[in-house]
Length: 202
Image 1 (cartoon, rainbow, N blue to C red):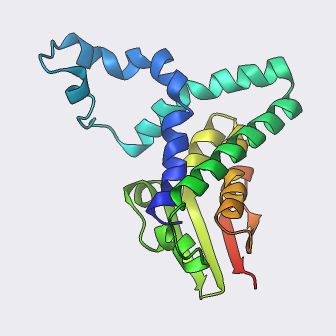
Image 2: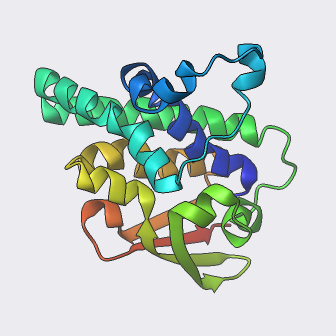
C-alpha cells in the first residue's frame, strides 16, 4: 500500500463525511467564520487547521455515522450494510485502478510499501508492526486503529467494517488479483488486534 493506495483511505476520510461538513460546520467553522477574512476562499481553504487527528476523525465521521445509522433503520440493517459494502468496494476498486494505472510492477512489495514507509495519516492513526516481510509473503499486526476506535465508540462497527475494512479486498483485487489477503482478526470486529496476511500467487 504505497502512498497512492494509502490515499484510498484518505479519500474515504474526506469523501464519506462530506455531509458532516455541512451538518457539523458550526462545530469547527463558527470561530473562523466570525473573523472577517480578506483573502479569497480558495486561498483560505488551503490553510491548515489546528486539530488533533483524533478530533479530526470525530468531526469527519461524527455527523456521518448517525445519518448512516438512521438510513440503516429505514432500509433494514442487513440490506443497508450490503449496499454500503458494494458501494465502498466499487469506489475502492476504481481508486486503486486509477492510482496504479501507470504502475509498471504490481507486486507485493510495491503494494505494501505504504506500510513500510507510512505517511502522516498511517503514522497517527495506526500502531502496527511487520511480523513477516518477504517477496512472496507479508504479515502485519495492528494493535491500535483510529478508524476502529471511532466507529466502535459510536456503536457503528458494522458500518465501519463496510466502509473501511471491507474495501481492502476490492482494492487488492483491482491492484493484482494474484495477491490474496487473509485477515483472521480485525479490531473493527472486536478482536484485540488486526492481522493482515498477504500472499503473492504464481
